[in-house]
Image (tube, rainbow, N blue to C red; front, side, top):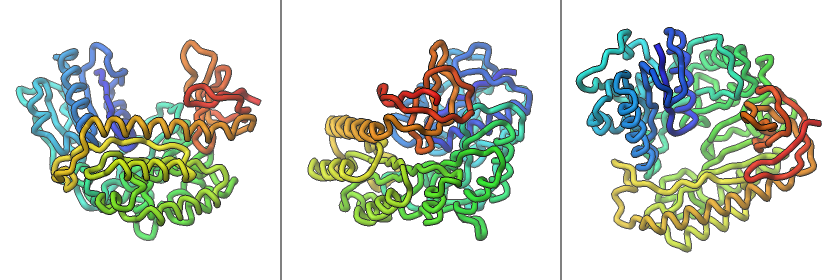
Length: 431
């Protein structure tokens, strides 16, 4: 039997797709790239963060059904959780699985994969209890960094966000279960693990926090790097900065710290848990304590009521503060959220204009940061070589992308001299 999985959205979705893939391999499936012919099973792991993401989900599902009319089609993920009725209207969908049961393939995936006359739905409310992940310790080698889920759900209830509906309230993964999967991934060749979840800084399992997770993973032989995915402001323990600042510790000097807006009035309307001064106080303390720290952020533009002056304030603060780059998110009305009910929505053309401006500023900021490293030698972890080219992508400890001259084995470390910049990456050669 042959299967393909298409993933939309965040690192957490990417992680869960890898678990699904391993489970299918353990059941005897061959995993083919998306778009391959002769597929018996197609799984679309969806996202609901914006209306555009939802539209793309529907398009991907329709295209799969049209190209593979004989295949069993499963739709899962956040859009399946929040909008199962919309997905059920798409002809050819066989099964809609919510986030609670996404990884329980033994419970919902039939052995015969016979097409169904109408979609069966397995969508229920998200649990509140802490959890384990039914990962399968298969032996297939992994040649890239791997995500490691430690937490799910969120209690912060930002006024624009659908995640509490899609993922439920905050809950943490069993500590020993995390360590067990980490050891399994390292045994398969992984040299770098990225901790992921919805709100990972709120991790609590007994007396364990994210600091204890980092220390437990640091004790695993052959694990060269630990990286923290996106983490909310005011949830970063001081112990995390201590370990990032220690060159002997495998926790890498990288923080992705969403700010969403650098205007206090907008932050208050968003129901964020900090003001601009608090955020920048922590940001500058982190940068001063951790040499070479890269700081990325998320900024949402055109939140309801945001004026041109408030947008310009956010841009100015972004450029003044020690950020390396930002991911720009254009506000999108999410059903059932309080922000979507407001009457002062920003016109779409204004959203598009502001988005383009901020993306340009982010590119400028990233380039300025990279320029500081030209002429330096940095340790990099190689990814898969570019087919047909004499170059291998890699990442520095502080997550700068480097295109390294020559073909080098993935998942290996090397000292590389940084020579220049090509588009959004540094260039380099092995010393």
